Image (tube, rainbow, N blue to C red):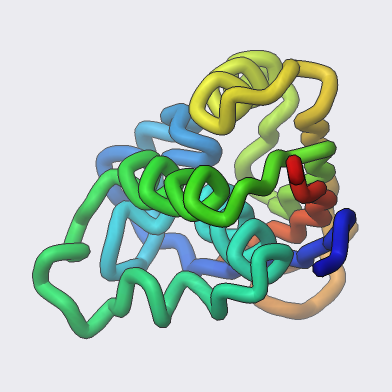
Length: 162
């Protein structure tokens, strides 16, 4: 059994005018929302994919399919908490997480501290073990660069507790 494992998470969602956009469980906009089956919180979705990848447990679509009515409009924090239950079962713990949110329209810097505190609390890890960066695509002509979508990448390292 591997003592240290890693995972990579990724998610992207289109934006539309709406009443609330959540990133990392924190409301970052009153003007937009994600086009998604759940609440569309792409940071939490990328985290779930990275965490399940590190555990060798598939991906978010397998655990929480967007074809199921029970996950429609669900708060992604609930899905993250269910994912953390897998760590207890498999006896793994998170070493560290590093995430990048890429967005032209929504700047996450005013919310970084709150997001880091919330996610660290949900994951039951030290604050310094969850890092978050905000980037843009400098207007490069793709959906994210045009401000039509936001994307997120996460890198995760875990270890077996033995």
